[in-house]
Amino acid sequence: MYLTKEEERMLDGEEGYAVKKSMEILVALGNIYGAEKLIEVGSVQVAGVSYHNLGDAGLEFLNELAKDGKVKVLTTLNPAGMDLEDWRKLGISEEFAEKQNLVIEAFRKMGIIISCTCTPYLIGNLPRYGEHIAWSESSAVTFANSVIGAKTNREGGPSALAAAFVGKTPYYGLHLDENRVPDIHIDVRAKDVRAKMKKFSDWGALGYCIGKKAENKIPYITGIKDADLDELKSFCASVVTYGSKPLFYMKEITPGSKKHKPPKEKVTIEEKDIEEAYESINDDVDVIDFVCVGCPHSSIQEIAEIAKLLENKRISPNTEFWVATSRLMKQLADKRSYTNIIEKAGGKFACDTCMAVAPLKGRFKAVATTSAKGCYYSRQNNMKTKLGSLEQCIEAAVRGKWS
Amino acid sequence: MHRGCGERKMELRGRTISKGVAEGEALTTTQPISFYGGVDPDTSEIIEKGHELQGRKVKEKILVFPQGKGSTVGSYTLYRMKKNGTAPTGIINKECETIVAVGTIISEIPCADKVDISKIKTGDFVRLENGVVTIKK
Image 1 (tube, rainbow over the protein chains, first blue to last red):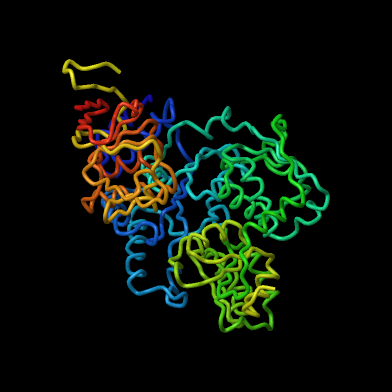
Image 2: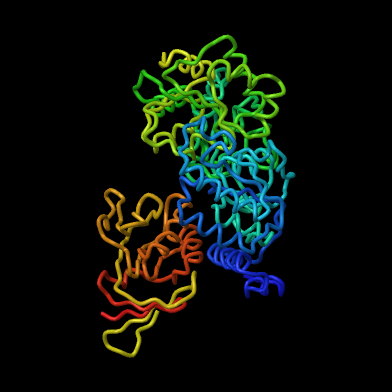
């Protein structure tokens, strides 16, 4: 890989340890994937924030980097393992909170914005069409590539950090137009599927079907009439969790869908596929002790809907109800009195964190959620899962049961 | 690849992923390894169910496998193992991917890839130096 004089100096350690280690990572990745050079990035999203996943080793590594590492571009952060302000309310231990705060402190030292959300595009890290970026967090990567039309590979935590310290990323993979060509045509055929696509969970279920069928490919999706921001956000999270590349085209909905033609290899999705997705995600379970919405983090519109559904209702004393969102959305919700309604009903806001990265193993037996991705991670936390509409989830929270 | 001068010595040339010199007994598998969830960082034991190395310890071994798999958090697991003293001495891959590349660089574990790993057997004494693998049978 070609390096400029300045980049070589960084690799030699002239800008310190963090930049040197970062250059070593970028050069190794560039060589592995055949990049000809490094290119500048407009922004970075860093995942690997929860102490639950990092452990002491990750914390130690971040502390090493924080000694002399400062980010060179706009850099935002993925969710942490807890609400940074109100962690006690979520049942987080003193010990965990202490460690998590050390992780956050290291990121703060590096000059990273402590946004702690998987939806950076909703809180001020919004790349432009065609911009090169280096993001981790698979749902955000998929959203940036597909819905915005920015260009990023699916970075891991350390490679995203490396890009932030250097301000560059190796030029390979999804940064190159030749690798952004769709290679499987997914036709969502049945009329009733389209008519049914009304709730977030359907978009998650559709993402499940398409992800499984487009394993490691770039889908070109036809047959979808319309999709709003929240629906696309849910779809992005699901399609990549269940197997596709972090890029898709949706005819007449996402950018680039006019430029490309549907590929020859074609698969159709019918109503039975969506039903089968629900069947395989849903476990046989009745009592629900945890309900979580906001995977990816809830938008203000979703919070408004939750408040509307919870007005004058009471969450079951046997059920924990979380709205996972960014701190910024919560502040908006405070102003518009949604917070008041949700908390009065017994619900809790889980800001800065989410069901995928909080230390939830062993705490709950069964979760109901609107998110297909959330189900995937909850199973890893040994929970039974139910995927359903917002209405179904709220009802489960109120009754403590799935109906 | 070419044979070295000694009768029972073989030299394989690969590509350096993480610099350095490592020597030790090879532990080899034809299956990919997931460090996050697949290896216990405290005991160094491979714990993935059904893996052909399940129950084997990677500590102080030259670990030879086709490539990494699974969560990118695996890079930090390697770092943790290095700090714990449970890490492999060196890693040799067929085709290295992001998790192992980043993990070996941040942990300063020598690593090479583009090596014909079928030539290395468990128990062989292996020296890895900047992409060159010397095997003593």
